[in-house]
Image (cartoon, rainbow, N blue to C red; front, side, top):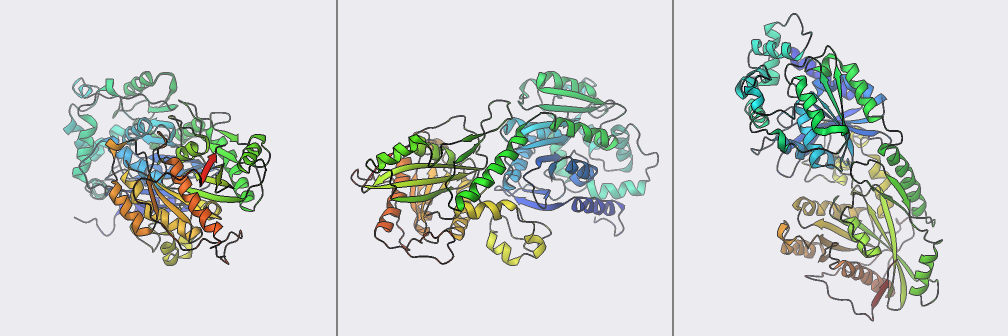
Length: 621
């Protein structure tokens, strides 16, 4: 049965949506690989100087009902807010049968990755706290800190039978938490609030039930059963992140005992704050006090991870601009050296391209005792995050591999000098944090409502309104053009154990060709060939794609140093041969004066052939 034309619940829902829009947030929809979709409110203009904060709602209404009061105070406190609807709430749904909080966590994390979030704070209320705890355990490098509000993650199935709750079994809990009658909804409100409304007319309650409690009712029941059955406290993983536990003193849904139990489980990494005269709905009853605790917790450290990220972004912007202008400057490697629970970053300075004695000696060796460099080629590494681009770079430039490597923050730039046919060739290799692409999720307010799997930047630009175009992330405009500018070679990298990273290759290729010279020499690289037993992308289908697009193709292993040298040397030798034959043409639009490569494209099927020693040898920096 559809809701009535005049619905108080729908009117209030519209008011909450207006509050989100007024706070600078816009709705978006992420379509995931398995067909699940996550609806999320995201900043219209992400600000890199703000700390990203993800807010997960509880089992009651949708996200906008539970977080609308927090938008302005949290934004004033320096946060960029990301507010998703969990699966089977709002416009989020999934076709599969998995109802665990672990699956919810994976879906939310996938949506955040598509939004370009590398590291963020996390706040979860009630059921959202279960999901937040799973995300912190499953993705420790992404979740910086965690706030858990009235989240009974330490509950055990036997707690129901032992009388810890007002219900004695899961079916009774479902009747209260997913009410289908005004009486059950009144009972839920009285259990959740210390001071519930005195008057709750049945007509309003029926309207609320029809709008909020009948959609995905079967799936929500399955979520509750998955949450309660077969929970065992002893197998609950510990999380390493600093954690704030907030509880209502008079919580009758998840009693305060569960908060103390969770504090004992996490030990010194967690602090417990009990808010007086508040029940389970502490986020609604004591919103101001709860918000103050969130802000204090995330701003507690003196010079924390977020401050370092701001410094790194400024250094990155300065360096990219100066290098793109042709100035010789030190190469700043913006890396994430976190270990364990540490949340600090450092900005490490690599040796200067013109001021380092070790590099000068290397160039002298490459030039046969002279400092002369005959050619400088720029090569970019392109592909999804976590496919191993940084490890490929480290293996080629320094012959290193770090098992505990963390995600790159910003831009990493390194050089290596080779001798090809008695000429000294200096290679500039650029790697970023997988953020080269404008990996936006289309706005629900935009007229360009394409599936995420098919949308491209150019088609979206051509069909979107000026308002929608204004929502583009600054990263695409500022970083992408500088990253690709002047590149004459590229390694297009995917992970052979991750199908999604290969499925994204056509979009990366389209972006590469749109923002670099149209004849750039490209090699398709399937990394992590050492994980043959976990292969998700066959060699034949990758080779077929490479042949279709006229690309080189190799499978590599940065761990075992397999084909890393061959990949770079094949690309560089091809560039050198073209340059040496003077088959270059100039492109009028090339702002840096770099001549364009001709349209010669070569397929390299199967394993790479060894490059003869009389044609290429190398010295590494």
